[in-house]
Amino acid sequence: MADKFQNRYRIPSARAAWWDYSQPGAYFVTICTHNRIHSFGEIINHQMNLSPIGEYAQQCWDEIPNHFPHAKLGAFQVMPNHIHGIIIVETMHASSLQEPTVDYKFMKSISPKPGSLARILGSYKSAVSKLAHRTDPSFKWQERYHDHIIRDETEFYNIEKYIVNNPQNWGNDCFCDENNN
View 1 (tube, helix red, strand yellow):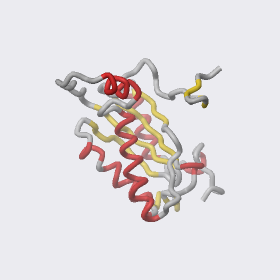
View 2 (cartoon, rainbow, N blue to C red):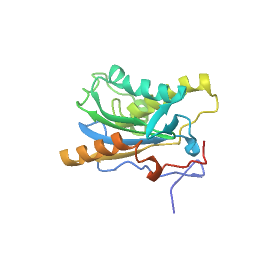
View 3 (cartoon, rainbow, N blue to C red):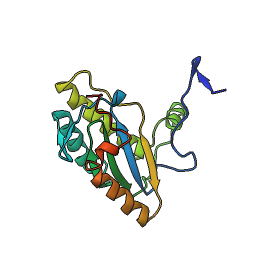
View 4 (cartoon, rainbow, N blue to C red):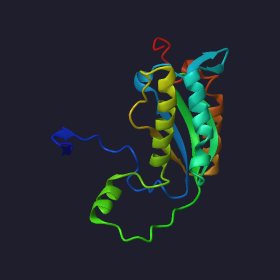
């Protein structure tokens, strides 16, 4: 039976419990729109044509290193109802010199670590949403995101190739739903 919090079932984390996502590493991430609505544009002749919200998704991704200097960006692609990207987290953070309070310790135990993949992607989703709501107040992301820890150079290259070729392969993409415009 799943654990409950405040008498509601908790969704278990999709993150690897054995991995610290604030440590150096490369990650392949996918974030979908709510109900896979085509908010970001459309594929025409195997090319992604961005809507204004798709342009916000691209712009905010490009700005990640300005807000998280330890994060470097690899291949990235906005698709009609999702984004794919590679984020490389390069450095660890120094701990605070101040003695933490009990409340702080509790909050730290349940909050994403500063500079972690969760913090970076949470900030990204929030920034895109804020801009998107100017154009479409109903825009929503799917809760959570999918990540894959990239383990070696060959895997990095194969994922990069997949991301770059995603618009050409849209018709065969598991996220393709032409009826969900």
